[in-house]
Structures are given as C-alpha cells and as structure tokens.
Image 1 (cartoon, one colour):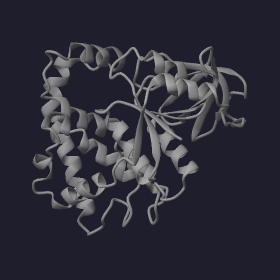
Image 2 (image 1 turned 90 degrees about the vertical axis):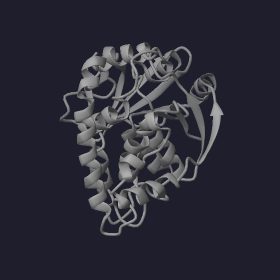
Image 3 (image 1 turned 30 degrees about the vertical axis):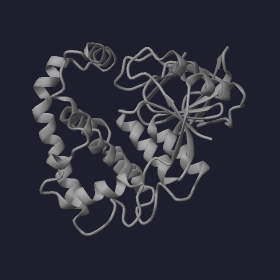
Length: 301
C-alpha cells in the first residue's frame, strides 16, 4: 500500500490525492507539519522536507514527478498518461510548476494576513527567500498573471474536450487543477471569481474534482517509519556512464531554489529522468530515496 505524507492545504498534496483517486486506490494518509522542522519525515528522506512525499515500504518518492511515475508503474490502469496526449502530459504538467505556480501562490495568498501567520512566513522566507512585505506588494501582478494562465486553459478547453489531453483525465489535468484548488485557501473553496466568463474552465474543474481521493486511511508517522523498517528497498543500480558519477558513490541531492538541507546517501540511479540514493538511519535501516532528475542538484559528498 502506498502512503502519502502531506497536509490538507498542500496544493501539490492535492495533486497526488487526486492521482490516488484516479487509480482507485486505498492509501495511508500521514499528516506532516506545514512548516519545519519535520523530524519524522526526515527520518525517511534525509534533508528533503517538501510536501508531498509518497512512500511504499522502504522506497520514498520525493517530488510529485517521482511519485506520479511510481504510481503509474505500480498501477498502470487507468493511466495518468492517457492517449492521445500520452507522455505529453509531463510537459503540460511542468507548465504548472515554476513561475506559473508562483503566480497561483500570489493569487491565493496575497491577501492573507501577516498577523497570526508569522511562523509560516518566517519558514517560507528562510527556505525560499519569500519576503512577506515584498510578496504582498507583488500579489496584484501575480494574480493578474495567473488570470492570464486561466484564460489560456479556458481557450484550450473551448473545443469541447473534457480534459486537457482529450476524453480522459491525466497528469496534466491534476497539475493544473491543483493551482485552482489552492485558491480556496482564502475563499472557502468558492472559485466563482475565477470561472466567471470562463465556462469551459468551470466545467473542467467540476469534472476533475469529481475524481475524488480514493480510499484514504489515517496513519501516523510512527507507523510509516515502522513500515519502512520492515521492508527492503526495491532498486537496481543504473548510473549513466557519462554522468561523471559512479554507483555506490556518496552524494548529496538538493533542490533548486531552496535552502533546505540536502539528502545524503549512496548513489544508485542517475539518468536523465531519475535519481535514487540509498541512505541509512537507525530507526529505519536502509531506505531508497527517489527524485526526478529535473529540479535536483547532485554533487559529491
């Protein structure tokens, strides 16, 4: 059974909750803190503390891209990459990251109060350089840019397709839907101000939301750690010969755009798609921590 480490208001957590729902799966729901420290998560991941994290036994999948691949490999049907778009879902999903995600954050959080959220803003400033005062000043521009993105989504859907890739929902739909879902942080879930004049977008939101979250079962972090301890990681060495690294080499894996501590371990996989390290911890023994190649910095330890 897959376990999802998340918290209820995480937009990327919503993407994976929907992915588990699309697959029709039962899964363990492990709630992690919104801000650092996250010591029980770090037992599994090392320095990686972003949410969500997907777990299956002693295999830990960091970043939604790695998690989506793990779900697809374990449960191919229904696919997260349905035809005719197929693997093109990955490229469309990537559009929901980076600058577009920052636009969505500005639209969702620009009007939120600073008072009472000091710990949250301090966490985001330390980790991502997100200064509250500057962020609030930029929020109207970010919201306008996000509105432009929504107009493009509405235009894409205007040809009558049910989902971004055609008749069936896929990774691209979940990635873009979570940007809209996140807007409910300040509206109580009311998205009418975003769908007004965008009827195709409104219908699509309803269809994606109807996918649901599958069958979550509440589980605590100690149970997740125990499951990792009782399992062996499933990984085979595959380090590209032209990568400049070798299997078994001690490396550090960090994420672009953050001050979070890197995860340290023995390199097992390094391709143009994936990174996997083996790391040891007295509470879990050996676990395999998997990352997508895009967005990660790998360097010798």
